[in-house]
Image (tube, rainbow, N blue to C red; front, side, top):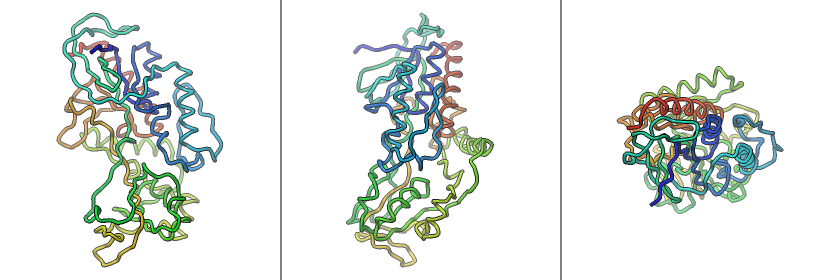
Amino acid sequence: MDVDVTDVVVIGAGQAGLSASYFLRRRGVDHVVLDANESAGGAWLHRWPSLRMRTVHGIHELPGMPFEQPSPEERANSAIPSYFGRYERLFELPVVRPVNVTSVANEGPLGGGGLTEGGLVEGEGRLLRVETSAGVWAARGLINATGTWRRPFWPHYPGQETFAGRQLHTADYQGPEEFVGKRVVVVGGGASATQLLLELAPFAAETRWVTRHEPVWREGPFTEDYGRWVVGMVEERVRAGLIPRSVVSVTGLALNEETRAGIAAGVLDRKPMFSRITPGGVEWDTGERFDADVILWATGFRHDLDHLAPLRLRGAGGGIQVDGTRVVSDPRIHLVGYGPSASTVGANRAGRAAVRELVGYLGQVKVA
């Protein structure tokens, strides 16, 4: 099988991947961006259709191109992908799609000494072998920007398989109209849970909101100093090789006009997590029960990193130990959109930092 050789492979063309590609292009580094989607947009392509720009929390523009704010009523899953597509075309980024990356492993000894403006030069070294649905690439470095959208997390509770109603994840949510007259349990303590609950409650016959932990409401602006503190809290875990915490576990939930109204109306009246699921609903050990037609799991996503398994990057803590964006055990690999960079602001910074450090490393050290 033919192998395409390049300096750096970027996996994923969301905010973090496009940012990394932009900075690689500015440095004249030969690279390719492999994206699993059919078109530009990253995870935004998969947001629920009823999500409008007025309810999107904080879009940070990509480096080098302003984001012209669309109409508040425009669908987020079309407005932001349109921006990403214009960005790819403006900077002529080398995005190849649709490409599904199946594995990344160590290649045998091939060329690859010092990095030059145009690409590889002769020398000894060991490359990374990136196997995909569209062929094989070999690269001296890799920036992984796959995010989480392909790995919705479904927790398990006793009796879950016996439920006679419908169970769906936020990844499957299409809009509030499908809940007309239904009794709905919404599970999850994040922003998506509160947004969807407020959206579907007027259509449903009755709702219950359940979370594992008491929600923490936070009011006031999300300042730059506060943002740095949040990033520091998340970064602490990935430096230790632990599984990253969700951002909302650090920031809390936004207490704004919309959520205040939801609390006052009794929609955002949080109940503790139920103990079991029955064919007709959910039950608590206290004896309380709620008859339900639908359980909506707003339980988040996990990082899409299975293709990196052959490199054995995970440590005893269950996560991958990362310093900034660099994988501590393998400096050829950088993770962006992971841990502290899993936000639109953090993604841009991570793309720049990953390129600066990776190019410096590859320019000085032979890959062995």
